[in-house]
Amino acid sequence: MSSEWLANIMEHCKQMKAGEFTRMVAHLLEVCGVHRTEIGGDKNADRIDLKIFFDEDVLVPAEIKSQTEMTKIQPKAVRQAAENQVLLPRIATFSDKKFDIGKASLVIGWEIPPDRSDMLNMIERLKDHYGIKVCVIPFKVLAEMAYNSSEGICEVDWNALLDHSGFWGVEE
Image (cartoon, rainbow, N blue to C red; front, side, top):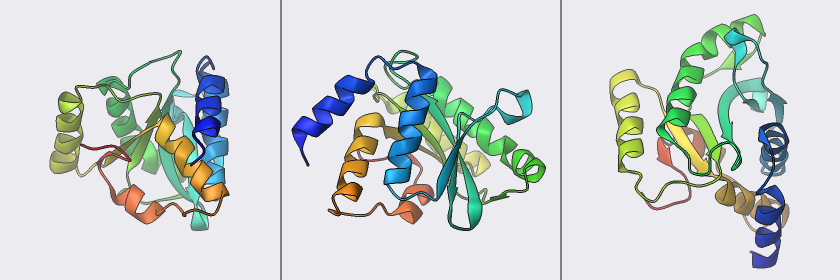
């Protein structure tokens, strides 16, 4: 991994507002091999920040938090990701998309807080009590994944990621 490339992209994206940051996240996800992405709508029934489509146009929702919006990913983002998962069947039906409620709803944000026990407990409760998986990915981890994919170093195992509930790419 080129530490210079990573430092440059982190510096470049540091001050991005929410819309520009969401477009950058969408681009990096596509570099990582997702089929396609769509920036979410403003309608109440379709408030998902980013829709990620995998093979056969299976829709996975993502809650995106830029550093200018939220430096450290907060439990509120996890709650919004869970709400996205609850709304997914309705959104998918209205847009003729497929969905798999067993896949994780994603949160992609700038940084995970140092004390993440409350957030991890919330994620575990969502999974245990409601069957909702939430996978939290720090932006730096996503950037590393994109770099490794683009350089042919390794491919992202999307099945493992979407079956995961918790933090991705960091020690829990």
